[in-house]
Amino acid sequence: MKVIFLHTLKTALRQQYIQVLSGILLLLFVLVAINGVVAHKASQDSFERARQLVRSAWVNQGPQNPHSSAHYGHYVFQPVTAMHFLDNGIRPFAGSILRLEAHAQNEAAFSPAQDRTELSRFGEMSFAWLLQVLMPLFIILICFNAVNADRESQNLKLLLSQGVSNQQYIWGKVTALYSIVAALAVAGLLVQLAAYVVFTKGGEAVSLPVVLVWMLVYAGYLFVVTTLSVLMSGWVRQARASLLMQLAAWVFLMLLAPRITAGVGAALYPLEHKAVFSKALKEDRKKGIDGHNPEDERIKKFMDSVVAHYKIDTATVKDVHAALPVNVDGLVMQADEEYANLVYDKHFNRVRSTIAGQNSISRYASFLNPFFAVRNSSMNLCQSSFQNHLSLLAEAEQYRRYLIKTLNDKMAYGGSKTGDWDWKVDASYWQTVTDFSYPAVSLAQSLQQSSVELLALLFWMVLVIVAVIISAKKLTVL
Image (cartoon, rainbow, N blue to C red; front, top):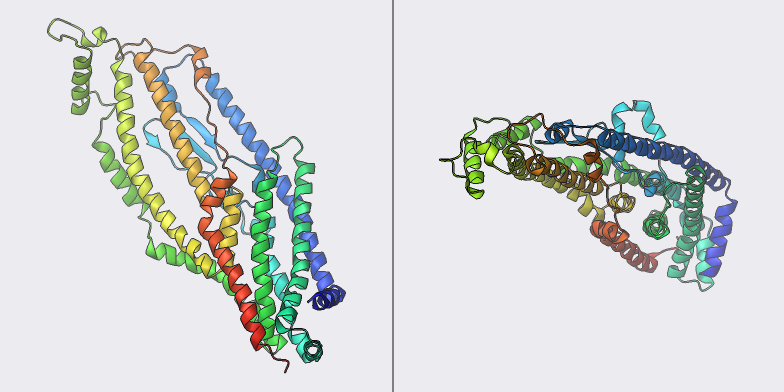
């Protein structure tokens, strides 16, 4: 096997077209590193500036009625983490700004993709994309005739006659060509990390354990692709046919399969029309307390319960509102919010469940196409997947509920009286309201999110090893 490894490696490295392809690939790694990290740094700076501006506007709003501030609302921005420069995932297509306000649960808006031109798609290549899509094409071009060339030149017959087993021969080919692929991938990663350190001085440090696991996932993926390409060169007797078949497989698995799975997901889990969703949401919302309609019968019943709770004798008290130690308006607003939260959870969870069902198609399709396995795992590890976007929305919604409840409670228990909408809190109060903070996702959580995909990748690695063992028994020299 060592002889086959060294012979294949030397032969490959001497091939001019492999040298040219490797040079082009390395050049792309450098260009993507510079472009990606510069864009990443700009996004980081924009996020931090926006966050500070919003926080400054909040704490400096001066004396204000709490419920007026609840309607003015707050803004949460899509965070930028260190791993995003390797794989930006769905972030360019997900809303980057989320408005948090009373009585409403808004969707994230203003995705970066909205401002793109068609030409800008070519400027969005990431290192992850190069490894997922372009590296398999490179592997095909250097492996398509790995066995065919030796068979046509009679070298295969010579090697096997010298006592080299079929399995040793195939593994020698695979390991030699895979070492070239792995060396280029590692070189590309080092270029990305070097660019990140140079261009983001003082920025968030990259987690080396996460980077290591991320690269191991790609190592498994590239091993699968390399082994399959070498096997295909042995299965198909003519090099030209082997190349055409592998290129066709690349086009289908990398370009067509994602569209097909998306279409299947949409057919199996159809999303309801936005107008239908809005109507159902509005109908359920009407069944709760209307905090801005004092004539609402539900408010009157709620008022009676508050009076009973504080044991106010309405027969002897002329002004019930003045006798209450709380501002009922604040309590009503919070009751309105709590019912609305139930409605929002019901309808938004239904939609998110449908989207999760659509995405599950590509998850389980990882057992049919390793591209899905590495793509989804990569996004999860880099915190740029749909799951991470949902997590951000969930955290933002929890903060919205905390924020609105804090303001309603201040209005209810802060010393104002019912009906006194001109009452204002002191300007120093706003600093006591905690700012939004998105918790970091741990490596364990990312791996858990990718459990199906990682299992599929392991399945593919075992499958190609078994395929080598079986193919070695049927390898012929003629």
